Image (cartoon, rainbow, N blue to C red; front, side, top):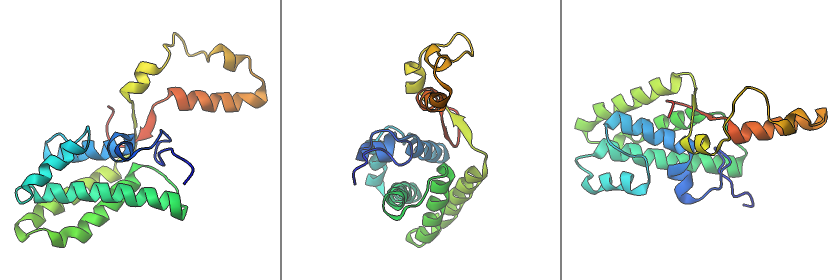
Length: 182
């Protein structure tokens, strides 16, 4: 595979980035964090520490495993099967399907909790997409004092304007993902 960019957001991809730092993965970890009222964003350690007490956190562990699995499967579908990206709701739907299939891994007393998690993820997947502002973009974007485009865009030829505009959009506008405004 020659392209080394993340299939979800076009940033340079690494294993850590794909599973934990990408805006798409991060939105899934934020959702899971809010459901279980714990901190899962920030990296592997924040997810894996819950695996140590597997019986006590069985539903959480199934959910985190499903998120990791679905990120990987979806990435590979894009890379090797030509599947196209639409938005984070696709990953949510895939995760819901995996959780339903994996329901048999839960003990009977945990099935209702897993069903509740799936229902909450389904509700989240039905919400309209929102603009997510990433703090690193806000800190690197040049300050603007008006709605006027930068001078290089104003003075460019009409054939180059579209390309310049696209480059500016990619560099300075927030990424469309789901969920909440960060």
